[in-house]
Length: 81
Image (tube, rainbow, N blue to C red; front, top):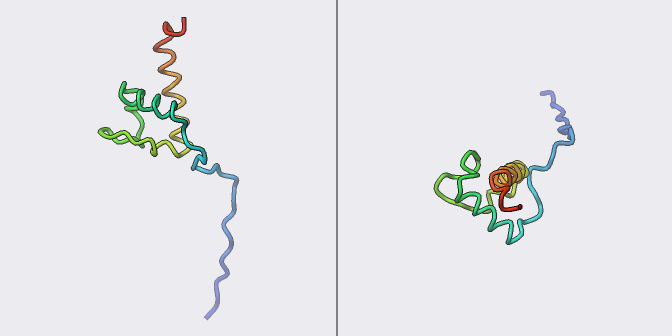
């Protein structure tokens, strides 16, 4: 029987999906506020009926959080004035 030589997978430099730094306490509170106000309702990784800050450990979730925070900022520009 002939042995099949397995090759090592090629690393194409893909991004590490995990973020290795926890959200600060203030950011956790702001994230919960965004969740309660509906800014995270379109996030496919967040359950509809339960908030859990550990859902924001992946880079995709952090990017979505940045998007939601920017939308919140646009919606509340009068606070900054």
